[in-house]
Amino acid sequence: MSVLSHFDDTKTAFSYKSNYELKRAYLLFKLLSYPSLTFIGKYFLNLLIKIRFPIDKVIKQTIFEQFCGGENEKECFKVINKLKENNIRCILNYSIEGSNTESNYEHTLNKTLDLIDLSKKDSLSSFIVFKPSAVGRFDLYLKKANNDSLNENEKDEWQRVEQRYDKICNSAAKSGISILIDAEESWIQKSIDELIEKLMIKYNNSSCIVYNTIQAYKVDRFEYLSDLHKRLSKSNIKIGIKLVRGAYMEKERIRAKSKNYKSPICETKVKTDENFNKCMSFIFSNINDFNLFIGSHNERSNLLATEIMNKHRIKNNDKRVWFSQLYGMSDHISFNLAINKYNVSKYLPYGPIKEVVPYLIRRLDENTSVSGQTSRELKLIRKEIKRRKLETNN
Ligand SMILES: Cc1cc2nc3c(=O)[nH]c(=O)nc-3n(C[C@H](O)[C@H](O)[C@H](O)COP(=O)(O)OP(=O)(O)OC[C@H]3O[C@@H](n4cnc5c(N)ncnc54)[C@H](O)[C@@H]3O)c2cc1C
Image (cartoon, rainbow, N blue to C red; front, top):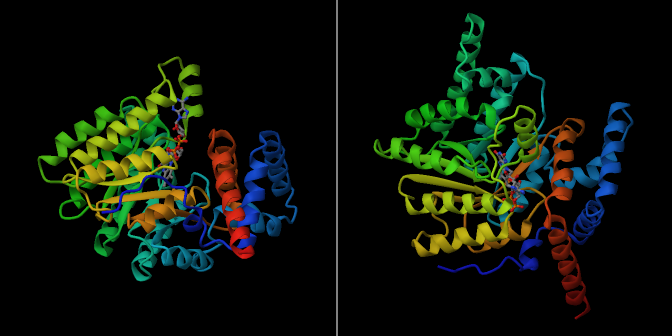
């Protein structure tokens, strides 16, 4: 078993990028390193979309191609095939943010079922992902989470939500695909946890079909995880966990303050990191009961995962363990893990350009707000550009 000690091999990390694509990524991350420029860029992007200014081509050739696979499934295959050659699988993620209507929830359901078929047919990846708020009304999850009583219409509505989850998991189980269910705001999570636990009991007997998401920035998650383990491991149910840090920190803190309750989020980044590591170690120590999908761009966490796997003698390509990053970010982690035979996937968002703009804006925000992320990407791209220049000169 080879043991990874760093992710600095930029030749491997950027092998799938042409010189042009590499320079474009450099320019993009350089711009993102100036928060004021990003702020102005976002403002104009929103404005130009609003007034229907024809900027699709510009968006497509810049941020869209950096962070998205294409405008439809067919277009994504160029990226999918390139990554597959490098032992990296793509998880197609239809990234449009629809309005809260029953017809949109049904549309997401059908799209997800289509993606299960596509993934099975073209052996894309063994995972499909969806967001709870894309298949059910946020306020309904909230009512369920708060144990509020539902009126007759709401009871029917909740039944339809449960049926959508079940149809997805059922189709996935028949196709041998696993379902990652995203975590969103903490105040609706209780209803989602309960729903997913029922689905795990129904579908995770012989293999791990259903995965819940643990957001390590939530103080209570280790306790939840060990409780879940106590409950399900007794009956030999495989527990599928996607482990992330959590993406809604600011929103969580603002709500807690405005509603005057204690924020559920760890007080510091160090505490979130400790919680992440504690959850990860716990899962690896009980790996016979778990399947783990690690979604992180943190070098230390990814290295730590490989160290713990080595310690527990878990093979690099053990099918119970997957690593994942978002397309367009942290290639150095994905590609260096993949070349060392770990199971790696990239979330590959796609959709019509104007529809994925909110997703792109979140990526811009993340890359300007996550300290060190942009400068790290820049440093690595710069290193690779230099390396290629030297190689051609020699
Ligand atoms: C494949 C994949 C799937 C994902 N799925 C989900 C999902 O379903 N739900 C979801 O919420 N997010 C999801 N994310 C996003 C994820 O939660 C993080 O926001 C993002 O990956 C950054 O965390 P990191 O571990 O990559 O990196 P790092 O840069 O090490 O961590 C940044 C994170 O640390 C935490 N943090 C930062 N500052 C503080 C602070 N002062 N106090 C406490 N905590 C702090 C926050 O969670 C922040 O996002 C996903 C990410 C990936 C790669």
